Length: 404
Image (cartoon, rainbow, N blue to C red; front, top):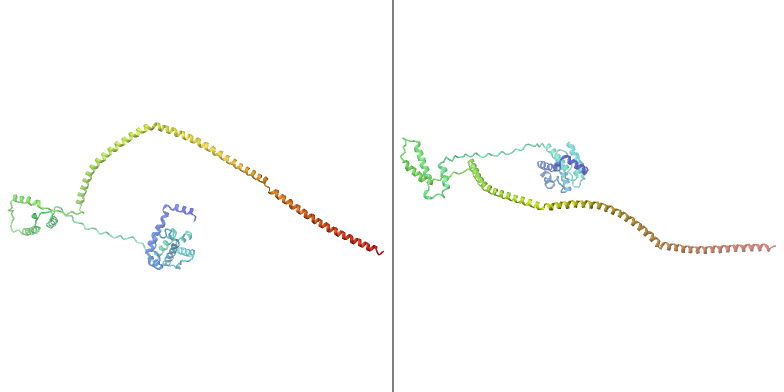
């Protein structure tokens, strides 16, 4: 698959397709942990644990490919099929073909080239291992169930005591906490008070006759007024009581109202100052605009003139460029002509051909002299042969004449 086709495929799948490999890797790691791969694979083969990004990103292709083959073979064997455990120096193509054939035997389609698995990382590697892990979980009978969340224990409802109900035990506890604040002279023995109340209660539970009060009301009121300032009853507040929350809300509301009044005054003052400052800035801006209006008009006129000059400059520049091109062509033709003239001048002033001609003439003269010598030798030899033949003929003629 080419790079363009792969990009087109990712565009068709959507922008989140690039992150699908991380989701697959997390699901795969959870399934491997369910299958107890730490003890059966890592400890047995002395390997490091697999992280959540191990097969999603490239770290060490050789190590990742070996881990992929080891996990794939272990999952296939655990799912009921048989495959030899791959070794580190096995042929990777043969190992990948075995794994893909076993994957197809489970009924899982693998519509991608086997070379994708040779890298040891990527979406295809995570897909193959995830499918094998899923088949293994089905083989061992594992089923996914909904999570069971623990029920939260509800706090026991606290009984809110009425502020009006004051028992002797509560008064005793609260007064014991405020001992340090009270003077020792005004200390009230609550135990004696309790015993007295118990006695009164026991006596009143079984009255023999109708009780009549013999206490003077004025003296009783005076005694109450004397003792009342020394009776301090502190009621313990419960943080969970709604009344406490209401009081806190009222306190916060009063604090917010108080702070709002002060803050509102400051904000109004700040608003007025900002408004005045904005008015000053606006008036100064108008004054500056009025002062700079002639300069702006001049600037606009200069800018328009500059644009016209710029257009003329561009036109002249285009003409200069054309003339420069023509000049370069003429210069090239001139250089060619100069080069031809130099070549012809060098050939005319060069004496090498003349020297060669002289040498050739000298050689021809020598060869001519040699030929003349050879011709003379041949003529001399021929003359000697003719003279010898002539002397022989004369000798034969004398010999024939003498016998007669």
